[in-house]
Length: 254
Length: 222
Ligand code: HEM
Ligand code: SF4
Ligand code: FES
Image 1: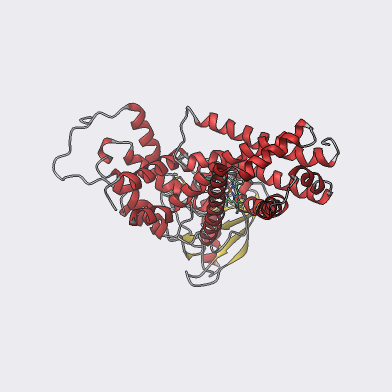
Image 2 (image 1 turned 90 degrees about the vertical axis):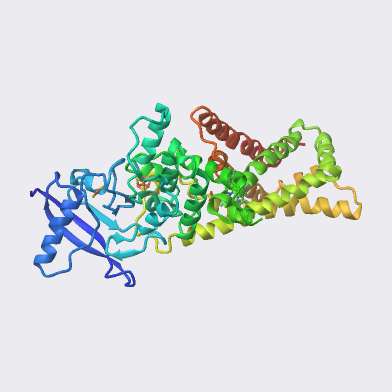
């Protein structure tokens, strides 16, 4: 695929987590407006390899907007200028011929850069491991619909469960706060009957882990909600605040 | 009490303190604003001074005053601890950010607006609260109204007060509704109402405050 756009990229290059990185400039010619943003990086990387240069390391996997890997901070916004999409769903037609595009990794104390645009998001995994699950007995699976769940709750839980753990909320937040992510994970279980037995310990442990990882506090600016590719609502943060304060005040845990 | 200290040192617990003290300051400002608005009676400060005297001598108000200062201090100290925590959460900044694409500038500037408010408050307390206290302890008569007129005859002070009021406006435009979200109060039925109240409050109270120095400076209040 080739086209007629010429793009100047300024990309963060960093050898490893200890190295000091910097923005490096690349000219990319013959860009088609129908290329995805990642395909444009593929083209550039093929050229870098053929010139015996180190290609730019970036995370990606599904390339269909569902895995959350493609973290890129593009011209000051996570996943670039469009709303409700990940970087792999962004196309070059969203830019103009001759544009200069600055691409940086997610910036957060809790997301250290591994190489170039790749950051370590295992802090999210540790938060999930702290309580983002339900404990169930093994054995035969129960009949579907055995437990009645109201349509409203099911819908809200499903909307919260749409979070793909991409970290755009952290990247967008001026405090690098993980509240939107954690609140989505708390909510998807707090809204369902299966989540009730561990409701209090879950929110206490997950918030404690979130704080221990070094994410900031929430100033309610709403930047996370605006940049989230999955439309996770700020209502989830309010729910987590309620759940957390309630659990601290009412649970038997000292 | 392990759980209590854990709660208040958590990110959510710290914001809980900001929210409660912020809402408390919001309720104080209503009283403060309407008592001061008594100058608009334009009666040579008679009723205004009665109000000022009541506020500086009534024993119940004395206790409320201590609670108010404690609340304000808690809000300020927590604010600086939070600002430090939030700043450390992103040690390496972005080369390019486009904040206006996803949030209001004043929601991202609560620390700056709060610091401006703090500077204003220091000047404000020095102007009115300190002289009242000195007069009270030395047993002298004190005419708050005359003092008001003297201070606001100086255009520099008028400008400082107007800047303080603008900082308050923006601090509250975000802070009012944010305090409810922090407490977990977000609901399709009530949140639009809270947000409208927040905008009305943020405009009306600072607007009335803003009129006071101007009215005195321009000589409307005799
Ligand atoms: C009369 C004065 C003040 C009032 C009525 C007020 C009110 C509020 C309210 C309602 C909030 C929202 C709380 C929340 O989001 O849960 C807030 C937040 C905040 N206030 Fe104030 N405030 C005042 C003075 C100050 C001062 C003097 C400072 C000094 C630094 C300050 C710093 C802050 C900061 C930094 C926040 C944001 C905290 C965060 O969300 O991260 N405020 N204030
Ligand atoms: S809440 Fe949204 S932005 Fe944050 S990790 Fe989940 S999908 Fe990504
Ligand atoms: S690569 Fe999977 S969401 Fe973009």
